[in-house]
Image 1 (cartoon, helix red, strand yellow):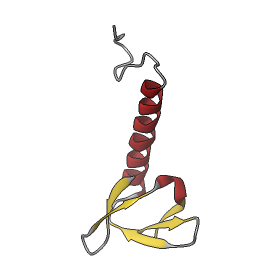
Image 2: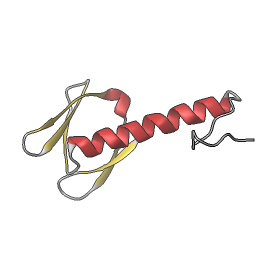
Image 3: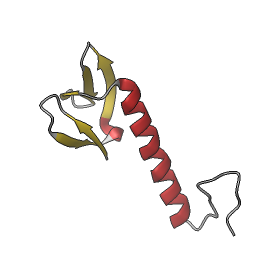
Image 4: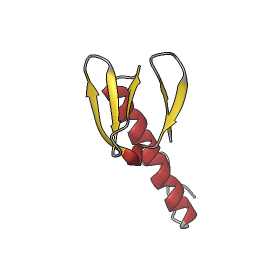
Length: 79
């Protein structure tokens, strides 16, 4: 889940797996597969960064859970 800010300054958490599209009109509109829409303060670029970080974290956790030898710093090998 990622945290976003609605236009009224309340914080909500969104499931990126259920998002269909993001539009900037000029406010950012997050549209879910169900058709439900949320207006948020974050830009589409900010949301993309949050989604990427969420996905990277999810992949990292899955690899660690599977016993893979992974590093958060790809230039440095973990021992």
